[in-house]
Length: 257
Image (cartoon, rainbow, N blue to C red; front, side, top):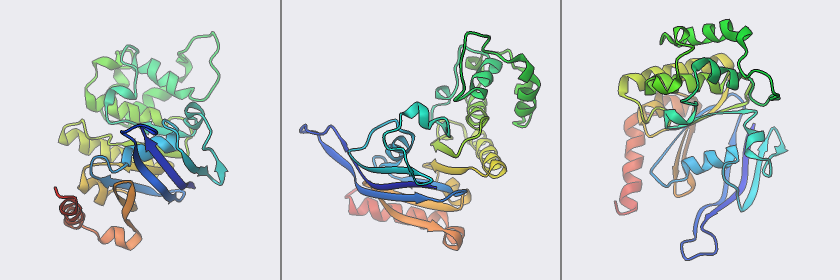
């Protein structure tokens, strides 16, 4: 279980540009939940993910995983149990390395790196089997540089790599936003398949309201650093895209947009 308790987050503290994003922000995500998060730009969606992953510090509050306080834990240590896929397909992979080399690195996430070979050839058949499940033919391109792949192929590879080792949480930061509609649909179907098969606790930030409604078992809407809508269970199942869009429009009118 993930808990954010009493989180305060300021940007540019002590300057004329000081901005308070989170003021006593609280969120609990239970094991096995797939949470879709929507909200306008600047609502705090990505900052929340960065706080969970340890990419940015907080001024006050606690981040707990299964009751253990990880607030002061370094990002690289948290990432041993967190898989993350970014909006930019280039961020989850190394373009100058082959698919095999990328997968070998991901397969050793959190492990010891000595002076031996970085590529485990003995695992090649296992990697090929994993790639074949993507249905993109990447299992026949293991010696191809990742930088030569399409955005959709790289994002599918990044998603696969982020869950190759046992992780407790999957963090998806608008991971379909940079893709064409057909590829985005394929990535979402693949995401849903991986989340269900591995029973991953997942937080997905998205601007696609249909994805937020169709996928996951809980939906949050954020605005100005606060959760203004939290639907789960039957309420989540019953909500429609038009309902979420109406809430968006009401917030925009209140803000004078």
